[in-house]
Length: 235
Image (cartoon, rainbow, N blue to C red; front, top):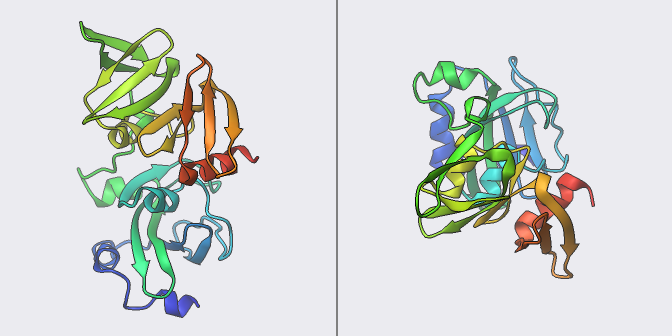
């Protein structure tokens, strides 16, 4: 099976990425929406993945599959026991269907190899506040007080304990540059919640979740993101 997956039929984006990074010895991960299909470790990094292991929520492969986009980012040791950086791209294989191909490096490799083209992950150096517009002035909102964020047009609506306003960047950009992925998770394509302020999760028979926040707000998850939440919280 692994020989078939690693066929010349993989889209040119993944092939091009491999050629550009051929000077470095990356690990290679191939996964579908449920499990890891193939893993080749690198002399520099080993995530300890075995084919057949369940796909880890919020890993780079998972984000690429759920959001249908290329992802260049970093993750700390919480997922695989070792921090890593990588480039993941969603592909459609003629036999195996929707998959993600991910090149994996030690957490500092992308910074060295790409010079100024650093991955968007910047949580460790991000400020503790987010500047949001409340209609009269920009207010500095503590990140820990944010309950949830939703997409409204091209902007992001930010709902916090004592403040509601708008930020000019979209949800995906805020997740990559300001919001800690350990606290802020996407529950819908247009909604991100702070898990520290989730009061209750109500399952529906159709596989979605009704998310009750600490302020009484109720948010609806999509089935796709509900699966990730169920896996993360083990219920």
